[in-house]
Length: 160
Image (cartoon, rainbow, N blue to C red; front, side, top):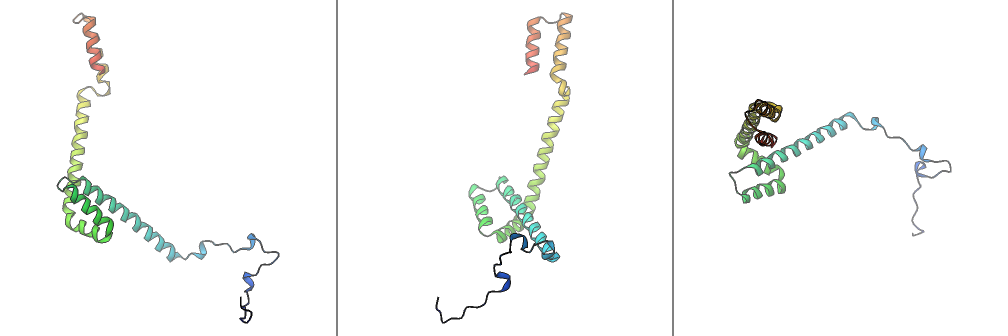
């Protein structure tokens, strides 16, 4: 260092003293973070979560579509990743009705599948379907209508 330049004095708060310890450092607490900063942080975090949710919903819609090719899906994906705001707005404007229709149709298909499953379980006697069939086969065996081999066949069929 050049001796001709004056050295600025060090402020008292930065000078090391023999009794300075980690315990003397100022404690930062919530009072140093104003309410409006907290509110703004919450708004930004909420917006970020909504943004991620929208991107997942749009990409799920893109990949579940059957009316566009793989190249179309790739193009929408690249567009959404490369220019996220413009890509999202363009997809929502261009496909808003289609997204709702596809989601509604998916819900109808899922409901029909659940209804079919419930009907099949109810037809088979609920969770006791196999037990009820074996009980009926045992009654037939006891009455002499079937022999032991036929009972074993019916039992294996009920348990399969």
